[in-house]
Length: 203
Image 1 (tube, rainbow, N blue to C red):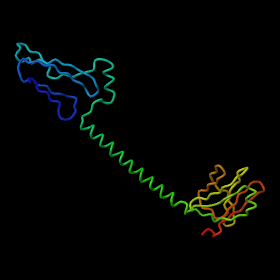
Image 2 (cartoon, helix red, strand yellow; image 1 turned 180 degrees about the horizontal axis):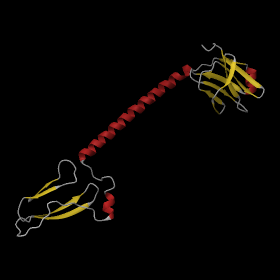
Image 3 (cartoon, one colour; image 1 turned 90 degrees about the vertical axis):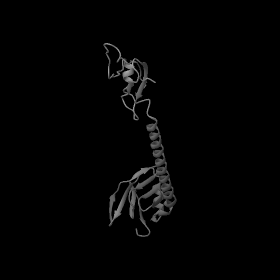
Image 4 (cartoon, helix red, strand yellow; image 1 turned 90 degrees about the horizontal axis):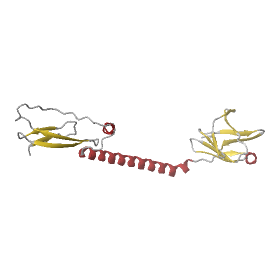
């Protein structure tokens, strides 16, 4: 072979081409990492009387489509980089799978323990509760829940030190969710009122 080609061991924008024999010629076809193609005809001219030569050549896309390709992601990457990317993707997927498995296990453990945290230790006047539509009251040491079938949504009050205060709650499909553990309170709408309290005194 009369020409030496050197593109380096790492992907680069430059390639070195050197002649080994005087008067030799060759063609070079280049495909860039963005898919652009270039063809060069090379001649060794040291034996000519008045040689003219270019020691360095810069390739510039000559049409719009070729220029647009340079703004896109490369279509070719070195095999080493591709393998590394595949390994990183596989490692990320494995880590994600482990995290998901841990979360699922934690959720399953919580669900298995949760029923044991429920306490239905409230009492109230059943006849007044039935008239208002109240069916159940319970807590899980973090939230208090009141369930019933109400024609209208009663207001919910907490009673502390004998003083009532209107409290915030979420209500949906007949279920009150109070973001705290209530010891005593009441539901009221119009002239109807149902008082409730915990039978263990809140201990």
